[in-house]
Image (cartoon, rainbow, N blue to C red; front, side, top):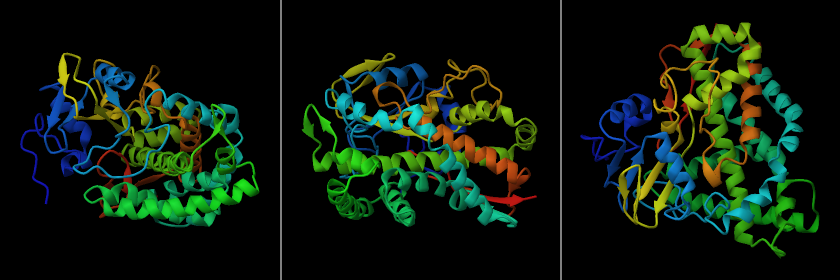
Length: 393
């Protein structure tokens, strides 16, 4: 059983129920006390900077902060690297450059008809329902099915992907065993496809990676599996969380719901605001050399909880940061990260989020939280609803 937090400034815990249920109110309180919270609950000690500028500076400082450890937990989960996400220079640059073509805007735009087809199919299946778990029955399947398409695997494997993603994430918050088991299964799964695509290449991402080279050399087996795991996990869980958070906001803010139904041209602007206000991703860094950022010391061996969501709530960067303004004109948010590791799939995530919200509002223009059912939020470094029961009016 975890000990409750008494003083958040020197003993923060991002697995505490208060953080899980409403981190934004907590951060607002903390900002008035200190710019960087600390904790000794985690190996080597941990830091939680809340200022946009500090988070920006750390994200760009690869000399003092390493990306090889991207999760802050008591135990280091022994998952193999996922390049380029878990890579530092000089390894990072070629690994990232390799993935730029398939996620370029022109390539992503080609997926729009398929995304609309998936969203429409899911909504067809939900038609006539009075209550819907919008997280489990709508948001989750959209990025999962797009990912199976991009990898060129059987779409019926989407539930298997969902199981592995949960094992690597939520299920491994307090124990490494689920992650270890999932890692073995993921390796076996992708090895099978890699062998098949070496012999019979197609236009999918697995074929692309098994025939790719860096500096004239083919990718190692470990590199390919790590990158495929990254594509499977990072690009799906974050997107379905963002879709769920957007629908939660609209369910709890009927005035915004009515406005977007009446003014659908405003949806892209609203999506950017949902991304800012409910950023799904918090990454981590490991301090590899003693340094100072924003006047605060960081000691070698410590872990840094790098919350882009906290950056997006900084009043020094945004006016009324805790107010969701769906027509916010100036919105330089960091929802997709900062620095070398800015999300490669941001174009794809935006497209899925925009289509999902647009099509939902066309089909279901009036909805609210289902009475008697609580929203269940993800724990740890991901923000988004795991259960979101909505009542259709």
